[in-house]
Image 1 (cartoon, rainbow, N blue to C red):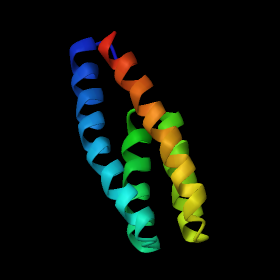
Image 2: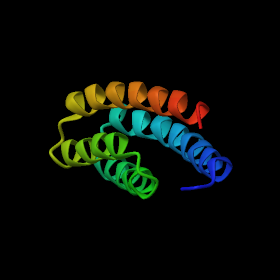
Image 3: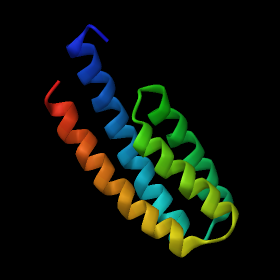
Image 4: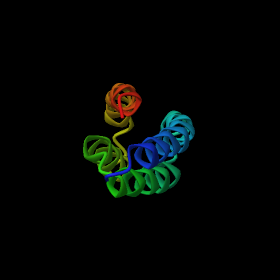
Amino acid sequence: MDDPELMRDIVQALLVDTSSQVGLIESAIREQDSAQCIRLAHYSKGACANVGANRAADIFKTIEHKAKDGAFSDCSESLASLVREMDLLRDEGATL
């Protein structure tokens, strides 16, 4: 984008939305609610992909697939990676 202010706004909106989704995904993993985990991860995967946050989208994709397999401990590990990735995205967004 050639509009840094718009890009900052988009990244900020993504971070706010995704942060709330991460908490919900964490609860779904803890409760081993596969359907909820898949739904939330799928939604967030698309949101991240739409703005070019591809590493985050890939992690959400992993969570989605692991939840389908019932591999909730793997989902938890991926969630920890996602939190780190969101911190990096937040840092990158601050430099726009």
